[in-house]
Length: 122
Picture 1 (cartoon, rainbow, N blue to C red):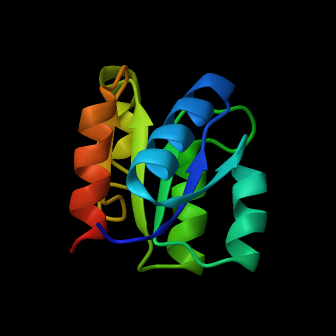
Picture 2 (cartoon, helix red, strand yellow; picture 1 turned 120 degrees about the horizontal axis):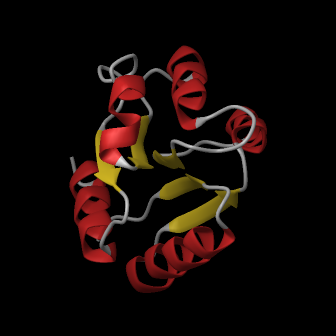
């Protein structure tokens, strides 16, 4: 299994904890967690990542705004967005060409692992 650096952005502390634990403990990925988009952008300015996993709905800058910023700064960085599919569908249209994957909430951890592994083994 390849080792990779993942940036996880979600305002929900439980999601951050579970995803971090699963990806880092079981799959040997290095996972950095952020509670919002502005914190994520600070990390992106200082560190290299192979993948960003971000919630769409967050206070302040949302996941769509984060994707737009990332596409300007790191155009080749893989991005997975997580959100309520029906609610977030109109917003997704503006970043569809940039986003590597999308997971509807609630998501199954096995689905997340599958999409992460697919992206990182390309």
